[in-house]
Length: 149
Image 1 (cartoon, rainbow, N blue to C red):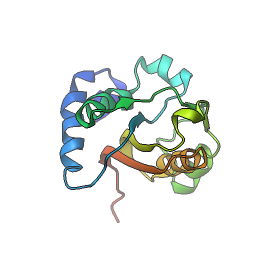
Image 2 (cartoon, helix red, strand yellow):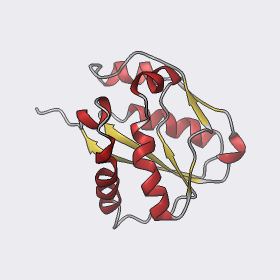
Image 3 (cartoon, one colour):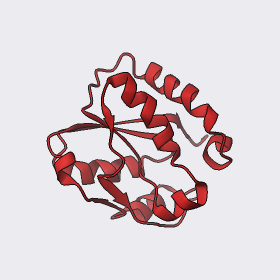
Image 4 (cartoon, rainbow, N blue to C red):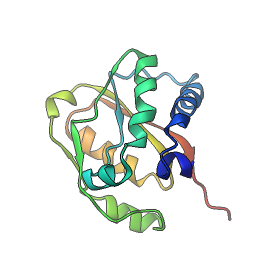
């Protein structure tokens, strides 16, 4: 996972997106649009690519819909890699802004990301997209991080 996200090993994206589609095979999801979780411009510049976008494109093709990567903007905040649930929720609050509400209103949206740790990012995007008029919001990730007890 880390080589894909931080070391430019983008060749893994096709396999990862296929695994994500396979995981959704029994779920009745029929999105109007697929939306990668946005990166801030600063993080996009530093990394050189949005890993969620690389995963979203093949998924959108499989559903026969478009990818919307420009309706929501994300402002830069500190990295959430070592934050707990409460810190993540606070760090992500207010970070997303819908800038093209006409592309959101009345749509069923499938959010795509590489990793979910606490769900704070999806929860915040869900609130913002529903407030902008999305009828349904789903989310899919390649992996889910869980803490051992």
